[in-house]
Image (cartoon, rainbow, N blue to C red; front, side):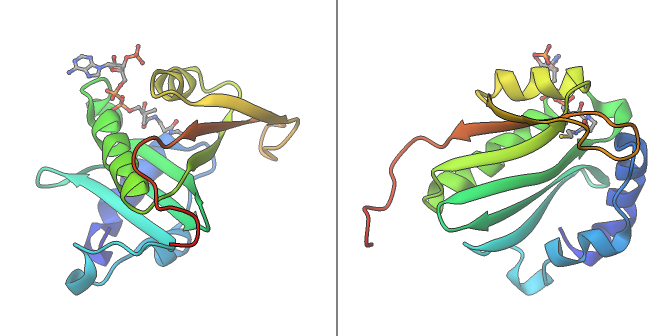
Length: 156
Ligand SMILES: CC(C)(COP(=O)(O)OP(=O)(O)OC[C@H]1O[C@@H](n2cnc3c(N)ncnc32)[C@H](O)[C@@H]1OP(=O)(O)O)[C@@H](O)C(=O)NCCC(=O)NCCS
């Protein structure tokens, strides 16, 4: 995700999220164009799906052996075409390549479409935070997915 992607990202976010992130919230996920092909192993990294305009994005933070998916959204008129899955596929390849063992996220309990999407991707419920979202008192479900594949041996 480059600074030049921000207008497209914000347009999607404003439609996708009941309490949308603002430009400042995306700041840490932006990459310098020179580094765009080499996402960092640790810390925040943002991705966009663009063809050529931005059609979706994902923001993930890696720390130790876990990665947390903090945001993912596809433009409303592009849902159901596999773009969310394409982004998730990229995230899983990135997580595997960087030896993350698990991918975590929080989702609104009532977000049936996202829950169905995550379950199809092998996420399982790992916890529930009642009244987590302050705008409507909705609970958050904590989901986790094991990242399979070759992992770095302990100590490597
Ligand atoms: C959740 C979200 C990211 C999914 O993105 P998406 O691009 O619609 O996801 P996909 O197209 O990969 O998959 C969604 C459905 O389309 C179907 N699909 C995938 N490729 C398809 C294709 N080529 N043709 C037809 N259908 C297809 C999938 O089977 C899936 O159906 P299912 O959910 O019944 O199994 C999207 O709905 C979104 O942006 N929601 C708003 C933001 C949000 O809630 N984010 C999560 C916050 S935690």
